[in-house]
Image (tube, rainbow, N blue to C red):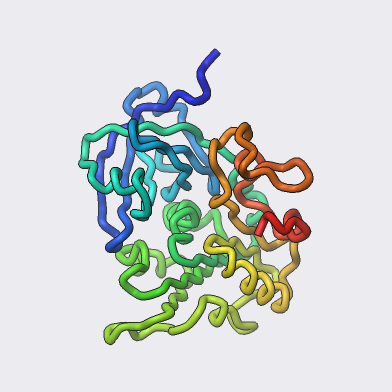
Length: 273
Protein backbone atom coordinates (compact mmCIF):
# COMPACT_ATOMS: atom_id res chain seq x y z
CA UNK A 1 0.00 0.00 0.00
CA UNK A 2 1.29 3.45 -0.92
CA UNK A 3 2.16 5.66 2.05
CA UNK A 4 -0.26 8.59 1.76
CA UNK A 5 2.16 10.79 3.70
CA UNK A 6 5.03 10.17 1.28
CA UNK A 7 5.78 13.37 -0.67
CA UNK A 8 6.29 13.66 -4.41
CA UNK A 9 9.72 15.06 -5.32
CA UNK A 10 9.60 18.36 -7.21
CA UNK A 11 12.14 20.90 -8.41
CA UNK A 12 11.92 24.68 -8.38
CA UNK A 13 12.25 25.88 -11.97
CA UNK A 14 11.51 29.58 -11.47
CA UNK A 15 11.14 32.09 -8.62
CA UNK A 16 9.53 35.51 -8.98
CA UNK A 17 9.21 38.20 -6.31
CA UNK A 18 5.65 39.56 -6.27
CA UNK A 19 5.86 41.80 -3.20
CA UNK A 20 8.18 42.33 -0.20
CA UNK A 21 6.53 39.35 1.55
CA UNK A 22 5.39 37.22 -1.40
CA UNK A 23 7.11 35.03 -3.99
CA UNK A 24 5.78 32.92 -6.85
CA UNK A 25 7.37 29.48 -7.23
CA UNK A 26 7.08 27.47 -10.43
CA UNK A 27 7.47 23.77 -9.66
CA UNK A 28 7.98 20.66 -11.75
CA UNK A 29 7.52 17.07 -10.62
CA UNK A 30 10.84 15.27 -11.13
CA UNK A 31 9.49 11.88 -12.23
CA UNK A 32 8.13 12.20 -15.78
CA UNK A 33 5.55 9.42 -15.39
CA UNK A 34 4.15 11.00 -12.21
CA UNK A 35 4.20 14.41 -13.88
CA UNK A 36 2.15 13.14 -16.82
CA UNK A 37 -0.68 11.82 -14.63
CA UNK A 38 -0.66 14.65 -12.07
CA UNK A 39 -3.65 16.98 -12.45
CA UNK A 40 -5.75 19.31 -10.33
CA UNK A 41 -8.95 21.34 -10.49
CA UNK A 42 -9.78 24.93 -9.60
CA UNK A 43 -9.82 25.35 -5.83
CA UNK A 44 -7.83 22.23 -4.95
CA UNK A 45 -4.73 22.43 -2.76
CA UNK A 46 -1.60 20.47 -1.91
CA UNK A 47 0.72 20.01 1.05
CA UNK A 48 4.20 21.43 0.54
CA UNK A 49 7.09 20.20 2.68
CA UNK A 50 10.74 21.01 3.33
CA UNK A 51 12.64 18.41 5.41
CA UNK A 52 13.49 19.77 8.83
CA UNK A 53 11.09 22.71 8.50
CA UNK A 54 7.68 21.03 8.32
CA UNK A 55 4.78 21.11 5.89
CA UNK A 56 1.74 23.31 5.22
CA UNK A 57 -1.22 23.48 2.82
CA UNK A 58 -1.07 25.78 -0.22
CA UNK A 59 -3.53 26.42 -3.02
CA UNK A 60 -2.55 25.96 -6.66
CA UNK A 61 -2.35 29.31 -8.43
CA UNK A 62 -1.82 28.40 -12.08
CA UNK A 63 -4.12 27.04 -14.78
CA UNK A 64 -4.86 23.29 -14.54
CA UNK A 65 -4.45 23.13 -18.32
CA UNK A 66 -0.70 23.79 -18.02
CA UNK A 67 0.71 20.28 -17.63
CA UNK A 68 4.51 20.55 -17.40
CA UNK A 69 4.64 22.78 -14.32
CA UNK A 70 2.39 24.35 -11.69
CA UNK A 71 2.75 27.41 -9.49
CA UNK A 72 2.30 28.35 -5.85
CA UNK A 73 2.32 31.80 -4.27
CA UNK A 74 4.00 31.94 -0.85
CA UNK A 75 3.78 34.65 1.81
CA UNK A 76 6.72 34.81 4.23
CA UNK A 77 5.09 34.14 7.60
CA UNK A 78 6.92 31.44 9.61
CA UNK A 79 9.83 28.99 9.63
CA UNK A 80 8.65 26.93 6.64
CA UNK A 81 7.93 29.89 4.39
CA UNK A 82 11.10 31.66 5.53
CA UNK A 83 13.07 28.60 4.44
CA UNK A 84 11.26 28.58 1.08
CA UNK A 85 12.39 32.18 0.57
CA UNK A 86 16.00 31.00 0.96
CA UNK A 87 15.73 28.30 -1.72
CA UNK A 88 16.99 28.74 -5.26
CA UNK A 89 16.12 27.46 -8.73
CA UNK A 90 16.82 23.70 -9.05
CA UNK A 91 16.40 23.12 -5.30
CA UNK A 92 14.02 20.29 -4.42
CA UNK A 93 10.92 20.28 -2.22
CA UNK A 94 8.17 17.76 -1.53
CA UNK A 95 4.43 17.91 -2.18
CA UNK A 96 1.42 15.69 -1.46
CA UNK A 97 -1.91 15.92 -3.16
CA UNK A 98 -3.85 17.33 -4.86
CA UNK A 99 -6.52 17.38 -2.15
CA UNK A 100 -10.08 18.64 -1.87
CA UNK A 101 -13.00 18.57 -4.26
CA UNK A 102 -12.12 21.80 -6.00
CA UNK A 103 -14.68 23.79 -7.95
CA UNK A 104 -17.01 22.18 -10.46
CA UNK A 105 -16.80 24.19 -13.70
CA UNK A 106 -20.39 23.14 -14.49
CA UNK A 107 -21.52 25.49 -11.72
CA UNK A 108 -20.19 28.51 -13.60
CA UNK A 109 -20.99 27.42 -17.14
CA UNK A 110 -22.91 30.18 -18.94
CA UNK A 111 -22.91 32.28 -15.75
CA UNK A 112 -21.34 35.63 -14.95
CA UNK A 113 -18.49 35.12 -12.50
CA UNK A 114 -17.48 37.46 -9.66
CA UNK A 115 -14.10 36.77 -8.04
CA UNK A 116 -13.57 38.61 -4.74
CA UNK A 117 -10.19 38.50 -2.98
CA UNK A 118 -8.58 40.12 0.01
CA UNK A 119 -4.88 40.13 0.86
CA UNK A 120 -3.23 36.92 -0.34
CA UNK A 121 -6.64 35.55 -1.42
CA UNK A 122 -6.02 36.34 -5.08
CA UNK A 123 -3.54 33.46 -5.37
CA UNK A 124 -5.97 30.48 -5.42
CA UNK A 125 -8.37 32.43 -7.66
CA UNK A 126 -5.57 32.80 -10.19
CA UNK A 127 -6.24 29.22 -11.38
CA UNK A 128 -9.57 30.44 -12.78
CA UNK A 129 -8.16 33.76 -13.99
CA UNK A 130 -5.30 32.12 -15.89
CA UNK A 131 -7.64 29.51 -17.32
CA UNK A 132 -10.02 32.22 -18.53
CA UNK A 133 -7.17 34.04 -20.27
CA UNK A 134 -5.96 30.88 -21.96
CA UNK A 135 -9.47 29.68 -22.87
CA UNK A 136 -11.80 32.72 -22.94
CA UNK A 137 -14.41 30.80 -24.96
CA UNK A 138 -15.07 28.55 -21.94
CA UNK A 139 -16.13 31.41 -19.63
CA UNK A 140 -18.75 34.14 -19.56
CA UNK A 141 -18.24 37.64 -18.14
CA UNK A 142 -15.65 37.68 -15.31
CA UNK A 143 -15.17 40.46 -12.78
CA UNK A 144 -12.28 40.62 -10.30
CA UNK A 145 -12.59 42.62 -7.07
CA UNK A 146 -9.30 42.69 -5.15
CA UNK A 147 -8.43 44.64 -2.03
CA UNK A 148 -5.18 44.90 -0.06
CA UNK A 149 -3.71 46.96 2.77
CA UNK A 150 -1.51 48.96 0.38
CA UNK A 151 -0.40 48.88 -3.24
CA UNK A 152 3.02 47.44 -2.37
CA UNK A 153 1.37 44.21 -1.16
CA UNK A 154 -0.81 43.65 -4.23
CA UNK A 155 0.00 40.32 -5.87
CA UNK A 156 0.52 39.63 -9.58
CA UNK A 157 0.70 43.31 -10.57
CA UNK A 158 2.48 42.44 -13.82
CA UNK A 159 -0.54 40.37 -14.89
CA UNK A 160 -3.25 43.02 -14.53
CA UNK A 161 -2.88 44.47 -18.02
CA UNK A 162 -3.12 41.02 -19.60
CA UNK A 163 -6.07 40.01 -17.43
CA UNK A 164 -7.93 43.20 -18.32
CA UNK A 165 -8.17 42.10 -21.95
CA UNK A 166 -10.63 39.33 -21.08
CA UNK A 167 -12.12 40.42 -17.74
CA UNK A 168 -12.93 43.43 -15.60
CA UNK A 169 -10.38 44.44 -12.96
CA UNK A 170 -11.42 46.35 -9.82
CA UNK A 171 -8.66 47.19 -7.33
CA UNK A 172 -8.69 48.97 -3.99
CA UNK A 173 -6.29 49.57 -1.10
CA UNK A 174 -6.82 50.63 2.50
CA UNK A 175 -3.88 53.03 2.61
CA UNK A 176 -2.83 54.68 -0.68
CA UNK A 177 0.58 56.11 -1.42
CA UNK A 178 1.28 59.13 -3.64
CA UNK A 179 1.39 57.00 -6.81
CA UNK A 180 -1.97 55.27 -6.23
CA UNK A 181 -4.79 56.57 -8.46
CA UNK A 182 -7.35 53.77 -8.12
CA UNK A 183 -10.02 53.03 -5.50
CA UNK A 184 -9.41 53.56 -1.79
CA UNK A 185 -11.28 51.60 0.90
CA UNK A 186 -12.38 48.05 1.62
CA UNK A 187 -13.31 45.68 -1.19
CA UNK A 188 -16.95 45.70 -0.07
CA UNK A 189 -17.22 49.31 -1.25
CA UNK A 190 -16.67 48.17 -4.84
CA UNK A 191 -19.71 45.90 -4.85
CA UNK A 192 -22.54 48.12 -6.14
CA UNK A 193 -25.85 47.35 -7.87
CA UNK A 194 -24.44 48.84 -11.06
CA UNK A 195 -21.51 46.43 -10.94
CA UNK A 196 -22.92 43.09 -9.79
CA UNK A 197 -25.36 41.20 -12.00
CA UNK A 198 -28.06 39.27 -10.14
CA UNK A 199 -27.42 36.08 -12.13
CA UNK A 200 -23.74 35.99 -11.09
CA UNK A 201 -21.83 33.33 -9.19
CA UNK A 202 -19.41 34.75 -6.62
CA UNK A 203 -16.26 33.10 -5.22
CA UNK A 204 -14.64 34.65 -2.12
CA UNK A 205 -11.10 34.07 -0.85
CA UNK A 206 -9.71 36.20 1.95
CA UNK A 207 -9.81 36.85 5.70
CA UNK A 208 -12.93 35.78 7.66
CA UNK A 209 -13.89 39.37 8.48
CA UNK A 210 -14.10 40.07 4.75
CA UNK A 211 -16.48 37.14 4.25
CA UNK A 212 -18.94 38.46 6.79
CA UNK A 213 -19.46 41.84 5.15
CA UNK A 214 -19.06 40.76 1.52
CA UNK A 215 -21.65 37.99 1.91
CA UNK A 216 -24.10 40.45 3.46
CA UNK A 217 -23.55 42.82 0.55
CA UNK A 218 -23.94 40.13 -2.12
CA UNK A 219 -27.19 38.86 -0.62
CA UNK A 220 -28.50 42.43 -0.48
CA UNK A 221 -27.60 42.73 -4.18
CA UNK A 222 -29.74 39.70 -5.02
CA UNK A 223 -27.35 36.74 -5.07
CA UNK A 224 -28.66 33.53 -3.53
CA UNK A 225 -26.89 31.54 -0.82
CA UNK A 226 -26.27 28.78 -3.38
CA UNK A 227 -24.45 31.16 -5.73
CA UNK A 228 -21.95 32.46 -3.16
CA UNK A 229 -18.87 30.28 -2.59
CA UNK A 230 -16.22 30.78 0.09
CA UNK A 231 -12.83 29.12 0.58
CA UNK A 232 -12.10 27.68 4.04
CA UNK A 233 -8.52 26.80 3.08
CA UNK A 234 -7.15 28.44 6.24
CA UNK A 235 -8.66 25.59 8.35
CA UNK A 236 -6.72 22.79 6.67
CA UNK A 237 -3.93 20.78 8.29
CA UNK A 238 -3.21 17.16 7.30
CA UNK A 239 -5.11 17.27 3.99
CA UNK A 240 -6.61 13.78 4.26
CA UNK A 241 -9.27 14.03 6.97
CA UNK A 242 -7.35 12.30 9.76
CA UNK A 243 -6.26 15.04 12.15
CA UNK A 244 -9.84 16.41 12.61
CA UNK A 245 -8.67 20.04 12.70
CA UNK A 246 -10.88 21.02 9.76
CA UNK A 247 -14.02 19.11 10.79
CA UNK A 248 -17.30 21.00 10.38
CA UNK A 249 -20.58 20.36 12.15
CA UNK A 250 -22.52 17.79 10.15
CA UNK A 251 -19.60 15.48 9.39
CA UNK A 252 -17.92 17.41 6.58
CA UNK A 253 -14.21 18.16 6.36
CA UNK A 254 -12.65 21.17 4.67
CA UNK A 255 -9.81 19.07 3.26
CA UNK A 256 -11.94 16.30 1.74
CA UNK A 257 -15.27 18.06 1.03
CA UNK A 258 -13.94 21.56 0.30
CA UNK A 259 -12.10 23.83 0.54
CA UNK A 260 -14.79 25.70 -1.46
CA UNK A 261 -18.29 25.60 0.00
CA UNK A 262 -21.45 27.40 -0.96
CA UNK A 263 -22.72 29.79 1.67
CA UNK A 264 -25.87 27.66 1.82
CA UNK A 265 -23.75 24.76 3.08
CA UNK A 266 -21.99 26.61 5.89
CA UNK A 267 -24.13 29.58 6.91
CA UNK A 268 -25.47 27.66 9.94
CA UNK A 269 -21.99 26.44 10.93
CA UNK A 270 -20.36 29.14 13.10
CA UNK A 271 -17.02 27.32 12.97
CA UNK A 272 -17.03 27.64 9.17
CA UNK A 273 -16.66 31.41 8.84
